[in-house]
Amino acid sequence: MATQHSRSAARLMMAPAVILLLGWMLVPLTMTLYFSFKKFLPLRGDSLGNGLEWVGLENYSRFVGSSSFWPSVQATLIIVGSVLVITVVLGTLLALLLDQPMWGQGIVRILVITPFFVMPTVSGLVWKNMFMDPINGILAHLFKFFGAQPLEWLSQASMQSIIMIVSWQWLPFATLILLTAIQSLDSEQLEASEMDGAPVLKRFWHIILPHMSRAITVVILIQTIFLLSIFAEIFVTTAGAFGTKTLTYLIFQRVLESQNVGLGSAGGVYAIILANIVAIFLMRIVGKNLDR
Amino acid sequence: MARAVTNTRKTVNTVIAWSIGLLIFFPILWTILTSFKTEAQAINDPPLFLFFDWTLENYAAVQERSNYMRFLWNSIIIAGGSTLLGVIIAVPAAWSMAFVPSKRTKDILLWMLSTKMLPAVGVLYPIYLIFIQLGLLDTRVGLVVVLMLINMPIIVWMLYTYFREIPVEILEASRMDGASLRDEILYVLAPMALPGIASTVLLNFILAWNEAFWTLNLTAAKAAPLTAFIASYSSPEGLFFAKLSAASTMAIAPILLLGWFSQKQLVRGLTFGAVK
Image (cartoon, rainbow over all chains, first blue to last red; front, side):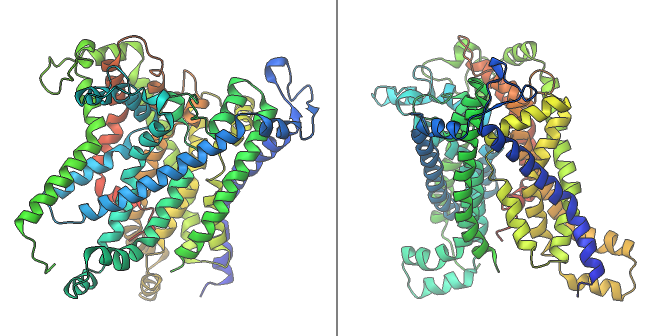
């Protein structure tokens, strides 16, 4: 069907997007790679113009050797993993609930979707101050009401707090995608199994869940992309203290706060490698699952 | 649906769903309520829900401290500009992928999505240097370009999935009926493609509006959008819950209203066209 002519036209139409993205990927990446082999401390007078001193793999070994490296990888994986589990599990339950007949379904859907519109800096600050503040926060009031000692959320339960904030932001997304998937389920099939007397749990396990697998894949893929690079939520709450320093945040501190570009760049290369490991893993699943 | 649902069951569903919905919405509701309290009332023990002296003083105070309109305008330009530019570049690309697919189409799509996984922080300093060189630091143009690039994979991907739903047979039929290329685009393709494009624009506008890595790191005074406007409240200055709430409400109100009114298209867009 496609002629030679339309093929070259297609290539031409694709070119701007492909070239721009290729440039966006390659140029900064090459520079990061270059800096990672150099001593580059702008505040001490190092600059591209003066020429940078080649230090080989020193930045790489120093970055891994620093005591904050492994904890930051761990923090990253814990946050991403926990938020994925929480949003997928709660999102599934919520989607099942919202699929039931009820009054005011449209309004409930709007209520549930709203956190998705809130910018990360706002949700970080609102949770930090108005909910997690150990004296005046809502959660402190709640704890006192039940006679418990209010928690200093962001220092005593820092990871849990960050996970809670980020999960709140992403639950709407997971819920809506999963709800869309459930609603497309053939109701006759469900009714048939209901008449056969299949118990609720069995129905969920054998009919609903398999049907949702593709949607769950999409949720995991897209959320992982965004979760690997969460920044603002940590920036405005703990600023990386109390064990919440993710790899992203650690590199940010090296580059912008301590102005050690060489070291930060080596960290950047590690982050890119970590992201690629996750990406390859995900792309495998998605590539398979998106074939129709 | 033929299933008979008893009113009792419907009532139970309604109560549970509304409770959970309100619980999820509560932080936003609480922020909006607090923005109308005085600072003293904002930290009253026990917390005050509706019965307090409603006031607008916090909004005035926030406006006095930082010029809201300038941040708002920056947000609109940056989110709108990057989305429009992205769609203009992505439509032809997605179009050709959907209608003239080759063996490599899927690889290109997956590659595009994988660029989205490159951690931004890994290339922060190079971008910073390039921006200084080109005089783009703290300019709206610079952010429009960066946000356009980071959202491009998602725009292409979404448009591709929408375009693929348009049956090729219709195009061929209209061609056989003697429709000119102009007619074909105007009367056959556009009506079918527009809902998908609208969903894409909406979702990406929201993503760009809320983007908070590049907007925080590449702006200072001039081009700072609302994400930066609110980040300036991260250092506590005594009693400030009510003012923080007012600033937060101001930052999210435009996008909240947009999201609520376009909910239907948005839900479609949210699934990135990948779930039906």
